[in-house]
Image 1 (tube, protein in one colour):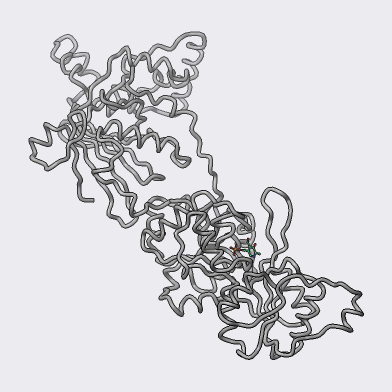
Image 2 (tube, rainbow, N blue to C red):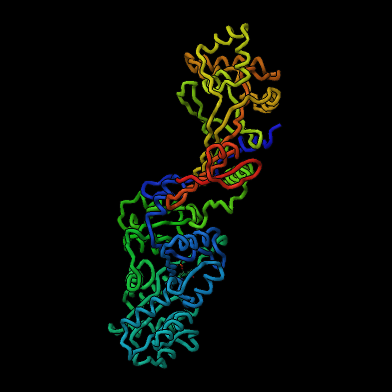
Length: 568
Ligand SMILES: Cc1ncc(COP(=O)(O)O)c(C=O)c1O
């Protein structure tokens, strides 16, 4: 039978990502390949949030490393911006490397680092900092020679009145810095509020993330925002926040880097920190749905007329970070083609398309035919088998394509005088031109394959065998439809269908003689792959004898094929 039957692919495939439409956010995953390319080329700097975008706790979110490393490989400037103050710069860098991200020290921006930087610039050097926070903050303050105290346990060991009687405040505190502190206690709040009573004491907070969902548990982890709020309430003052959504981060980044806001993308999972930062700084914003906020949140905000909520709506959203563009290193090179036999290469590409969630019908192929005088026509058919012996599709031989690809077998019949009259009564003019071109395009993969060659009718027993495997409704349809002829109405056609359904209810439906399989015997097979920078790849396989005739400089393929590259 068929060299490689692909019948298993054609019925059962459904698109399993149904992405709702929104008024003001664009879903990246539903953009065309061209649209994704335009999006990809619209920025050259990327700021990404970490937790919820790149990882969840200590586990990388699948696809994130490829995307981030791909940005860098494509010469995009990348900054990893996290509100998490519980790790020092060095600890973050270690985490990035352990999880496979190619991060450099100057690309990692954490709030412990930002807070230390802010205090270095604004604190009187003779003063010290009271820290409600983690050892990571202490580490960053040490690195900039800023004196500090307060990190660690400080629990109430006596009654409150005794504590109040005995408390001693340090005389030279110039700032109170609040970050994530697992030892937050009444004495710490007491001290912080008391230092902040002096309006000259700076009040700095790393970030204000309220809480985090603990994935799959229903638990809520209080974030630094709740600690900051406690201090803020008793101190009666608002802090200066260094973390997202404060644009302080951008001031720091632009000190040493040239950043064009209109060509910068901010990626995040939380809208009131990540997306808001992007909006405030004039960046493009992309929300990924792997963390805090959901599409439902965004949909609600988009409908609101509250400007504060509308500001949280991202420009783009995606289910997750994944490679939807092509990395510069992912090019088709003559030396590393997955096969030098075009049929095998077709098979490899076809398998990939078939396994892709967003390719609904991998075997839909546009078939172009032409009349003898060269008038072209094209339509989609389903490719049912492929391989060395040809690329097979089935059709009604009396349809327009059927008449145009009228094969040698019909021509011989044509020479027979008896059949001549019968034949001419079906086809008034001679239209045959038994060559065809077939093009497949897989948008989700940004790949296309073009096949050109002579067309042959396949053996009738093969057509019957395949016809017998089709659903009964399709078999009856083949009898009802005199393809490409004019019909008076849909109704008359449906009636005929109903009639045949009754007639064949208990019977096998025979293959109509005019329903046949055809195969293109490829002379050339071109493999096209889109590239983000528009330098697309085109590799053409051609039978060696034809290429030799044309004197094309080519590479040796397998099984009598050669291949060469065409300019895109
Ligand atoms: C204490 C703390 N603060 C802030 C964050 C938010 O980090 P990001 O800005 O990377 O989402 C986290 C995430 O784990 C955290 O644990």
